[in-house]
Image 1: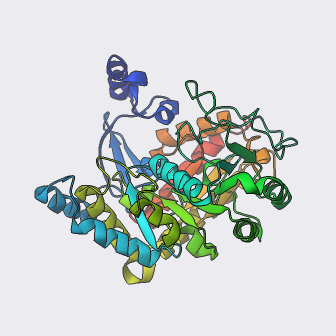
Image 2: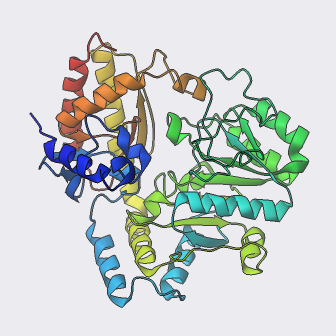
Image 3: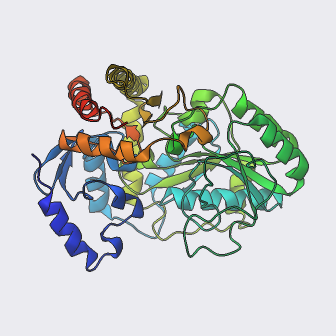
Length: 438
């Protein structure tokens, strides 16, 4: 029986001085208690009570090489000894920018920021400046950071009115957002070509950008329907609208060229983060020269005290370098492990008579307990039993497997066959214990 008493004690102590007791609101939902980490290495993390877990949370996505990979920690140590941040330029910025331009098909030039939220803000600003237009199209179930200009909540699972060209009913993502912040946003159902074309043809003259996740990772790991992204690309090109791919999750996770390299779709701008830094805070906007040059000529201001700091650049260079080695062999290995894990979980759902769906692409999948044979749209995703998944995740934690409470699983280059074996054994016991409850 695992004890979480030290984590409980630390949470109580933290709440005295740290708002909410956690540094990011999403972390507060972990059951039975938000864990406090003591150390981590490879695919394992240890909490303050001494419990060890196989980690599929992976820092909410960045740790694609696992915890404390030697290549990254050594590179960062060397950079730190030279100086963590200069407020000046340094060769590491050039090296990483050149590497990204070589790997990302859409990248003529790049600009660095510190988080996915910041990079999305820059991409939207570039799109508006480039087009002279103000409106942005985004989609139900996608996440583009928590800035006032793009952070929305989503209505209940009823998409009948989702295609309406109105912003009046778009709910903010949190209290405290500017009352008019979302007034420039159109919110559409994803994977619906007709809704997209109808809106773009009716209002395209005022639309600066369409921003999309290439895979709906945050809401079911749903793939684009055949031809959907291609149609989005052709429509935006025809109407002079900037197409932005938010690859904060998929960039350097689905392959060295991200999802747009994997799918063969060339956006005008792509945003990358998370896996780019291997656990260090760094993001980038990559895109067409004529758009990116709006920064160089001063049309668009791009600011940030720690942008391009030497530690982050070193971490990203080491991470992307390791992933690219041997023709990207790490990606093939991670994907093979994730396919085996996803198929194993599907088999266990069937074995125990539990209704559920596993959507997998590359080294990421989403597990949902839902009365459906497939989850291919946000409407169906909204019908999942979040409470049942919370129960499953808590049971897995007791078995020594750390999961994200939402159902999204990541795998890293540090995971191995034995980790998958142990995880499937744990899932077998967890699902057996849930019989009759889901």
